[in-house]
Length: 557
Image (cartoon, rainbow, N blue to C red; front, side, top):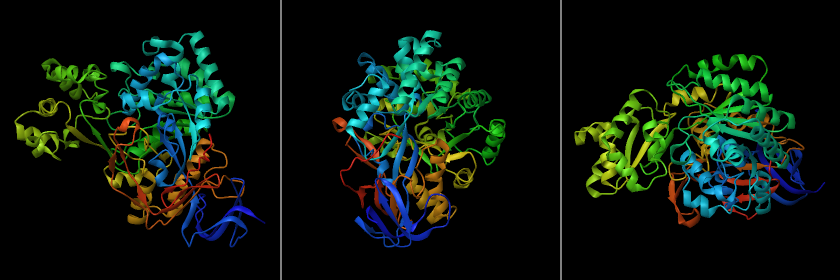
């Protein structure tokens, strides 16, 4: 028999969790057609020379909604063995959107996902208004990777309700319109919807993100719409308590949505803060699981660091005192930061525990960049040390330093998952999926797109906590089965030929680097990897030893 592609002499890790086995596979028509000890007859044949052959990894938490307009490869995610992504998370995106509302939608992405406003306005081609038109535009352009897209609830509410979306709940007529638009979007290829109820997620000039105003009636009606169509998921970004567990109110919302949807529901974020957090989580969600509903959270398998400035003060977004700092000119921000009343309210917010991303632990914040030579002495120093050096309290120390440098000072926040013992427990716990790469977002603040490379390098090769079979299963079949991505996540006859070849012992996450490759020459942080030989999507080679081959075989899942 002849095949489009034959891969020989591979160490096949099929995604199911079964032990690796030596063999060959044949690919025909974008599908795995045969698996045997030896195969031949391929129009193209690749000798793996013993490399691991696995299903392509699935990244379940990305924000490529804008980047897909100009980057069909979805870099840097593609450099880490990923062949499929789920985007449209956290309730923000670029569709649906009327032309006159583009700037407001862009500010939502600036505030929630830290994307540059001018890049969004000028880099995105905006050749759509409705969500089906957005999907059609992506298909016309083509992508190298497969994409599943959730409709962002904030954009949907704003399209239907206008400015009222950030002020009130929807009325019956508006809700009917939203349900109709969601139904049309899913028919066109969307995979459910997403929302955020998190306090730190704010819209233009500190207003609440529109999805935070959604009532239980709205969520129920929209969930039933997805259920009735029979396709898709719902992702929620939910508030947590000071110990990192979703609040009782958050759980009540999660349970309600799961029961109305009767399909898989995922929520974020899950960041380890104490040894018993997985057990407390399991106890809280047990009633929902016991009744047969599928819910799972997501965690990162690596430490999360955030780079920020007070020009885009994302880490303080949940604090009421900081609302007036967003989407203002630098001059307006400096005037605010000088204000004694602002500093007093900032201090009160921290004392009251209103922080979400930053929770008042100044020892987790260090100086990462300075503009003036005389301030270089503060580099890499934690804020309490800077405060001691200047004879000020931490609030005055960081605000005065930032003002002195016209807000160019960079701060590095250790946001979570720095305790390897706790992370090890999380990535082995049930109902906690590996995700939260946030790829495509926070482009000049952090880059966690290399999560799969980190998992293999750190938890398989170095620490030997997971076998390569377990790691591959967690990145492939587990998310595919949970979300219902048909024919994804395994190497088996009839499954999509989304495949990667790599040497587990050689997989290495390279140091992060800054590059000016966004539209308009804007900067972002990227990370590359070593050890991956081939990335194949739908039977076509997309990357050959890191070199893009020009193909765009990606499909909308």
